[in-house]
Length: 67
Image (spheres, helix red, strand yellow):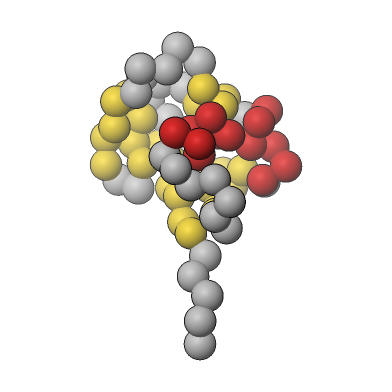
């Protein structure tokens, strides 16, 4: 599967993958994230129901605390 994450093409050996699987694979579990797939924000409550497909374009943004 070939997907684009934050403008960079990446290849994965997944046959099927949801957003939760991808977050786990990228070692981002527990982080405050916003994820957009093909121009649409994916609510965290829908991560496990939202499947990634070959050719998808994702933007993953992590929240940064501080002042």
